Length: 319
Length: 319
Image (cartoon, rainbow over all chains, first blue to last red; front, side, top):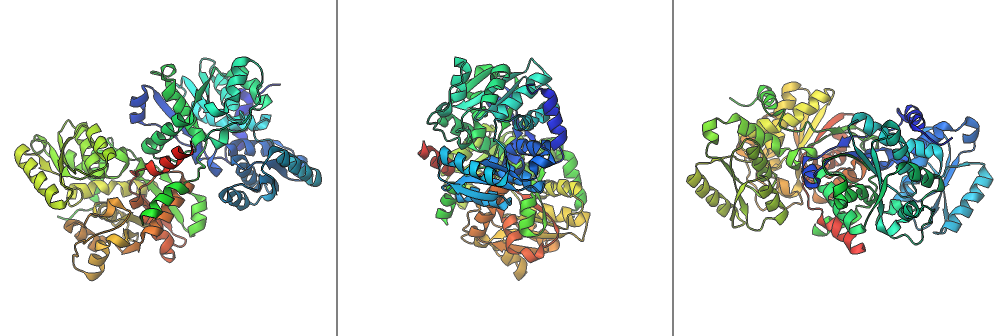
């Protein structure tokens, strides 16, 4: 049975007291600029700094005690690794995380800080998968895929559920697409609440496998993606593709320069830190402006985990 | 009659529907780090991106129609210029702003964007004052000092009033000191609500005129201040000095490196943009940690107007 709004609502009941109900920000200056009323759902304020904590928490709370008895495992150097580690710690479950040995120290420290058991591998997909297989084999841990899994998708959809509960007059919802967990959950939720709501996905030009899959009508795997949006380099999931085909209206491409300009406006006007992946949605509203004129638009800002060292290097250099 | 809590409450009633009631953020990770419970009052989310909008609005709403008839004037290249310009526009009053001719374009554009009448002067205090005097003489505009004025102080105190209304169990309130408007209003309000509350001021080591004045017992003017906190370079006001002497418990010094480290933690953990001046208060909590252990601490984050170009230059260089 494919996921429906009911699954998102059940996920919300399950995780509600474990996740932050993130704020929704607005800016009259930004609204003037784009000629629409924008509602920014701030998942950068979510635990671990990204929406991923919703899906990880929902998945662990959906699994039986037996399934959790030997721990959970994944390979990731990004937000999913932190999300799974913290969600597991909160439930007293061991998290085994396979990370490429060239992962930034700040990310390794964060995952370790959440108490995960880290195994390093070579920085390629083959090594990640074979290392993970060995660990799962040895420990009996349950593999938690970062996006291609129904409990993950249902969890990610709760951000849109909160947004549309707070602002039921929203006409359009837009979320980024990478692996597709967030946009799938967002689309299932939004269309389930109101079939008139338009749902758009924003995707970087340099990692446009979802775009090609969506408009060609056949699943096109990602090859050599290149974008500043490190959270959107992953290849679209098969399960996610099926939900996107069914529930998403358009996929809007934006290039890295457009993403950076949008990100700067978010920093300057909203005074919040978001990672480049988050800025794709605002970049799409600016670039494809005619789709949004005079509409109430909900934008899911996916996360805020970004290396700020360059900014501080510059300040330190002034001292 | 010196200002009391009643004046702050009156200011609040006057400006309440014109200013943002800014959010208060907390972080369990930060609390763990410092061994205290911190409540960050986010004036970086205030209109024009800083608390200054409170004082400017209160002042204009306190003045008679006659006084406002010929407009208002000030010299400033910073947040006060923007605050006065927007507050004046909201009331249909002309704002005359004297700005040094080397002011950053982004600040000139912001003031112009709020509809102010800008006059440029040479970048020194003498030229600023003489240019302002000429304009006041010619137009009959009312000069609005950025901090050494009672209506300004009362307006700035409303941030603490909101904070302590939302969190009445706060034991300590800390705010930055530059000219002294914010800390004066904060101290009058906090001690007026509860004389047991400790009030601390945070000041950059490189601009420590308030520190010297406070502990020597005589007013020491600022000479050659040097700090990354561009908002705290101004010299303490005489009126502000008298309120600080009466109501502030300690002035805590922090150096620029400590301020930068604290600012980075705020960016990384709270996911918000603040300017260096704002980070002084958190730097003081980290440095003078024994004063804060196990206390509930309210920190006024004064503003978020910072040039983010260095960060984006670095990102653009990667493309």
